[in-house]
Length: 147
Image 1 (cartoon, one colour):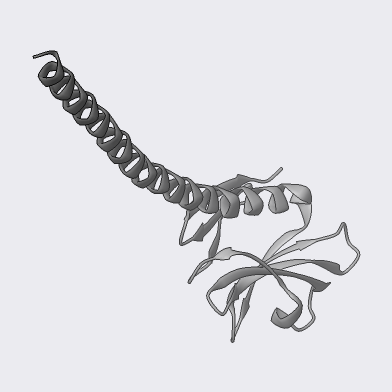
Image 2 (image 1 turned 180 degrees about the vertical axis):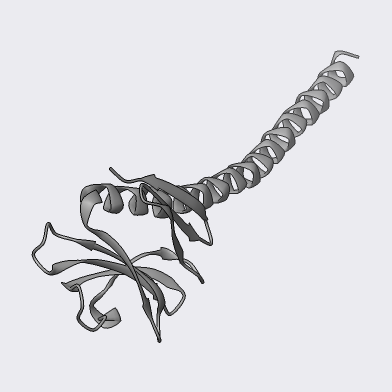
């Protein structure tokens, strides 16, 4: 009789262990899926905020020397000149990316040497009034108050 009880308790122990192991594996699978979704959304959010923050930082760098130009090939070009030197940062769209190059303000744009800021299919610049600039990309818009 005691041998029968021992056999049943052994089966119960194995069944309970298998149940907990199965629950643990399900928890790992679901946890991995949830974590990857959160990480993907965070990367997208960071990309959006990075482009907007970069545009804001560059424009606030030299507020007095900001101009907007139109290029036949690249569309809107935001020019932030280095305090009257004739050189500056030029921001525009090239091959699906918002890019920045440094060169003569009135010189030809150099997308082959430009730094990619982030993915964007369009870039709009608008001077709303003397002190307010609106910059729009795929990630949203940024308003810059110019002193």
